[in-house]
Length: 436
Image (cartoon, rainbow, N blue to C red):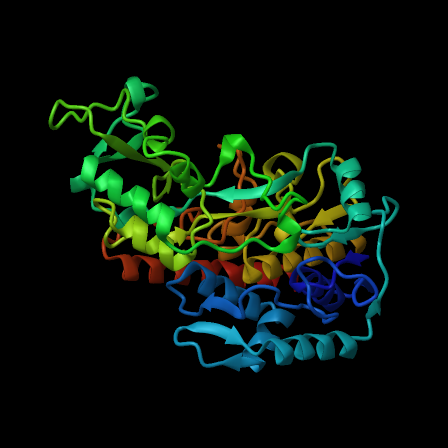
């Protein structure tokens, strides 16, 4: 049983059927629709029509190639419905949805059932691919089953690739020398630079909230402990200096003085290949974020692995409730797939669906579960969902950060990523031979 006919659900059904399982795919639309959907189509793209970069030196491009080698229904349909988009894979939404629907209909082992699932059964293998906005009844069933709090707001700061940062403008130091004393990269701002950042945060374009994100009083229900940085900037000229940009305990060792304000960058992973901007969760549009943050010293040539987001969403605390096979730790007959796991993005959702479908089908057939290779883009998605180094798990796109480093160092970034992609595809082919 697969709950949800989005990208993850359709991919899960497709992959499970390919391994011989009989699949019931449930989709409540068009009889009942969620607040973000506009049609009753399978695999409706509710945001952008882009599946992002296609080149192998791009992590999401590598993930697409791995999906393609799995005979992915989502990638095959997207390529069939592609429209010109430079180096990205973008689609005609209607053609894409029609292509997915046609493939689902062509597979005898998949039965599409158009009705709402209000409760998750526990007596049969089931994949929950309901997306980030499940119905109220299904959301309660997930809550009851998971036994741990769901996150109801998606607030994430931008993440920047470490090798695109110019550290000559920064200094390494922890506030009051805590930890190892140099756990953070610090960007010192003088009065003028700080004033320019505040002005940008106030004036640059913001994403407009959806109707379902607004309370009856006409306001977005922000958590006071996790406000958008532009909201803090609007509350007063010095609010940021006494909040996430406070310079206290961060004296610049190069000058011996305390800056007017400090932007802190914190490691995103153990290898230090990526940093997040502390406290910079935001509703600024992505172009506006690049404009404002690109003015900060040392970030003029930044490569953004993820830009900040803040909108209502539902996602699991995946590192605590799911195992490496995307199976619920408390109930081994239930898998989760797609955005509800904390895998952000269309391609990542499809990848989760593929993994859950394969694992569920193998379990049903009495075969041992096989982990996707750690060196692959699939492995990077799993690594993010299983990252227990942070207590504050947040959704994210696939990036190069979770990939294991190469044994031999390659300094040039493009060559290094090409080598990582080659290594990934080699290990992925071995994996495919195993499951086939």
